[in-house]
Image 1 (cartoon, rainbow, N blue to C red):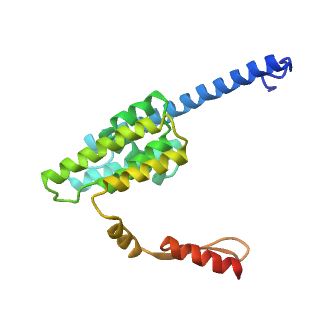
Image 2: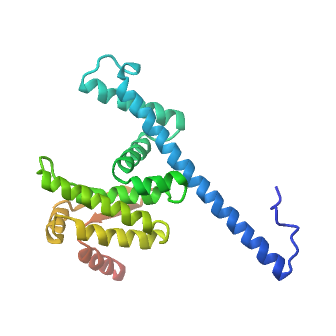
Length: 227
């Protein structure tokens, strides 16, 4: 199929008009795509919610184990129908459920098509940093709710005015300020999670990955590069 603008007069004024029209059309397509992805996420969440309320569709019994099995079966069923991985379905499900529960402003913008599910996912991931621990006091739960409200409010504004990289930086700065755990303690926790992974590739080659403190990673890269 030939591009719709092939027969456009190439005079500067006409070219500028059609370039602007093409960009407007692209922006509208992006809004439609965002709206579709959000609606698709809702449909996945709805399907799993129905399985939770009606586990007998997939399994016998109604106890906790049966409910878990029904959810896993529903996820498998969705993955099979959409021809995607179960991990992908679980990721979409988690993002949608968390956004609907804790990010009402941002989620509505995603439903309207003005925010991508990528930015919604980044914001949902940031919520983990401000969650209260299990068995937290009512005061700690209030702090959690207020932190999530502030994140939702800020993210819904930044998502409309910032490119993804700037959005991520601002979100990280805000979460650092709201995180009840100090930076030193967070770093200590992550240091205890450090690890090395070797992923074999083709032709006798492998990827060597290390989850280590940033300053050590930079030094290691310099030494490897010089070698």
